[in-house]
Length: 563
Image (cartoon, rainbow, N blue to C red; front, side):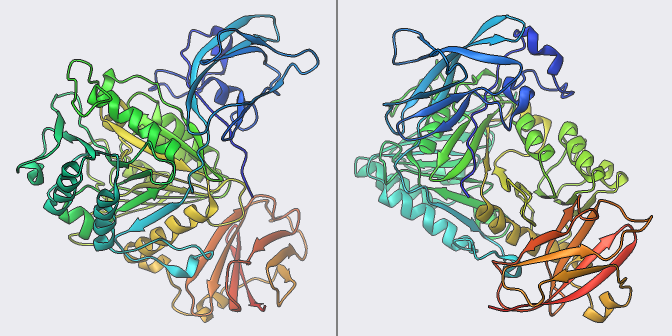
């Protein structure tokens, strides 16, 4: 189902009549005004299409009284009788606009929110291709699959995209030692493609130590690092524009060995948003960088669109340190309904740890894998002390380099999503480094990332991946629940036989294959009061087992799926 697109934006604290709604997120300097009102329903820009946007306000706190688009010379007042809804039409696909919105509160205070950037939906394919360089667990697939699980394929795909470029290639890469990628960039430049490259000055970047046919700009200051790992191909082309991002550095170890993800997206609007970030660091829109205008780290401005549609998929994009990225990550975590899965190189940012702990205490199925548990300020022990099911990477000689979170991919929640990019969950990433973060609202992409997570989980937490036998599950089974229909085709309903004094409204369930492999798990907060359903439409015919846990009581029920 296509999910509703809401455009959120940041605004400074000078709008005092909303100050009382400021969340306890004290380390951040700005707040998201309409997230504070109600991010799910009250964003002023509700829908973005190729040629139109929709303004709407259902909030009891304010009404929209007028607007101005950057290409219009005058303010457009709201029509009588249609005060809180307006469609703005005749826009152009993949075009950056700025909209200013006049608002009036319910106590007659007026203000204007100036120059909110947004970009219209593109006519690109919207293809989102997920690559990993490690194995996956196909047992949890809903029918979706990563494009590849080979580091060699990631490298070859990057080179192929560079070789296919006709107009431009922009690279912002923390480190590179792959000469074959640099050779591809040289080939592109030599055939007339504009090639620009931004690097982190403190790294070796050994592959750049050769004759280059393109300009390189290095961030070289002590405040932070240029930590991006993205490439933009042909941003001006509707059907040939590609963004490549994720956690993968352009080095042999990172591509071939360390656990990483790379996401290839064919979307002109998204490519242009990343081009805005690139050119802010580059200092110009030409092939030559302008160091006088170049901005890195804390000097960058919050000036890019935050929400757009990639095909039918809503995507949020945040750049650090300008965009309060951790606030938006926290909001995504706090909006989780049933499950959170984390795979992180580092976790030292305390506000995000508090959000994870809060969701754990609410009863969600929260699991985490962290690589550097002994890093200064690590929140690993704090998570453990609060009972969060978190584990250290124990695989020798392989770094868990991901920076992703998967939200509500294990059940039928309303808004499953994936958070990925270059942004480690640290203070340095939040306040000093150049980073990017995507939040992709799509069940299939979330499921693809879950397949990778479950494979890493089984490597590191093997005793929580399989049961030794189905008999082990039956050995402590209660008899308080029944399910129907059984056999089933797509959906099974689980209902309590009789409510007791020990009954709760928090039910954990797990779906196992006939061999005892965990396939799916989730939480139902209303399970004790009503029958609840589990969607099995993405799983093949066969024999399964559903385990239900309430307090310390378990029940295992055999289930057949027939089609």
